[in-house]
Image (cartoon, rainbow, N blue to C red; front, side):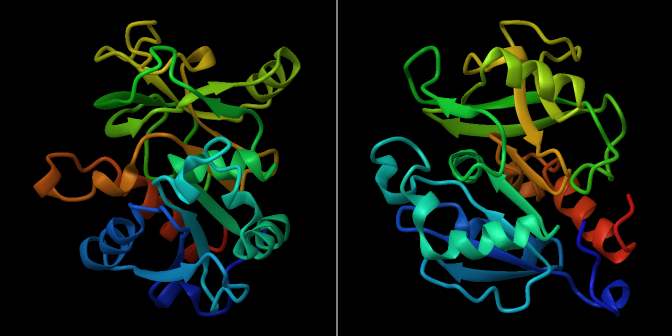
Length: 246
């Protein structure tokens, strides 16, 4: 995994937030990172090939390219994604939220795919998540088994994978967060979209690319009534400043 640059421990971490045509949570993400948490959100346009020296990358939610073909299918071919893929394969930290998760799956940086919700309806709600691992760059500020509350808003959030892939990611511990009820149990009623095994977010084999459907950026300040999303961003900040350790 790529190590932080010299001096990372004393400076503000810079997160590149990619905007595709149709992105709608990019500005909210930059606001959460910069104005609320005190980091620096750096806007990156879908045609950019230069990451402008950012420390990590986030693909935000929205409806990139109108969700034509299927969610994330066209965004995967945006010029910036060539650089994002190279950055990820060299060990750089990359996070995708909602549509960003879909793009990362389409790009082959994460296993599985996101398809239509089992209800065939758009879902907008607050959900409970259980943290399955806190030894990743994205969850170090959480406790193992901790229950978080984050908002969701998606029409294609049902996580699916073939049997072999599902078995592999479970055995490898690549499932980072799951949908649960208020008691922390993985019930069918707590699953908002029909995702297999109640999976809400996964990491790649190397552990440096993470995607989840819930919106962490909308749960960082008291105005929204939810604050648990900040833990994901603070986790990345700590990981980078500590030289790649939780």
